[in-house]
Image (cartoon, rainbow, N blue to C red; front, side):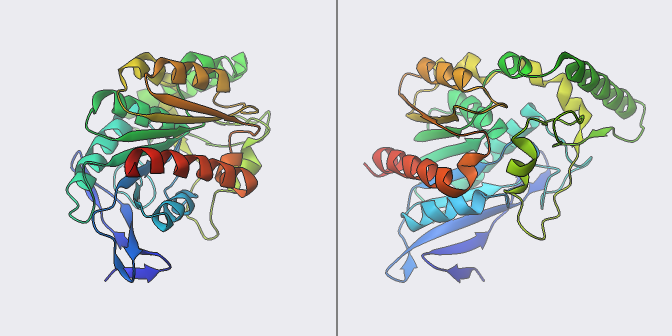
Length: 305
């Protein structure tokens, strides 16, 4: 049976993506002691190698308390979802999971399938922009600190680190084709350490999102390094036909705010907000409050208006 907590009901509801199970959680708002009738819904997906337990419940709870349903999920090979090899970040695979999640939510009888917003953060922010460009039947999009331009992101990295990452990616691909063990790289590291993300804000910022007792592992399949430079959702931004909110951080050293603003200008109906923060600040503390307030105002205008 679903658990009752505060102003919303929690339901575990999974879906199938490419014949593999993705784990998902649905928050349903309550009205006068019962489930609200057919609320709009926000589908939330995380960023690079993160799990749905990493602060997505905080956003979902705020949305549900405001009268929206919220559904958040783990990509295949991460968290509670199935799939091998584990810890496989890949834009195309994640897009498949997003499409399957959208189809799953559209079939949930308790929600209004005509009022669905896509919500993505960091790498997931790029994913929702990509999916929105091909899905005219959604209602709105929110992308916070989004990855939008592979080349812009690449320019923030040290050349030696790029060379090392490319070598690691090639090693992983060769091992895979020869039937060997996957090659992994740490997801996060301190400055100077080899990792997918190692800017000064990364270590503390990342672990501020990881809940106590989490089984998250600091590793990702190295093959992702061969795709990062070419993954640029900005290319299709002008095809997004629904209202879109992009929130960036002026001190973000991972996903450049200038690229995010450029993307917003390409979207016909868009809002862009620049917060004086780094990449991880919007998940916690005072910047979380500013961030989620902007998002709720946007959602109330475009899903309830």
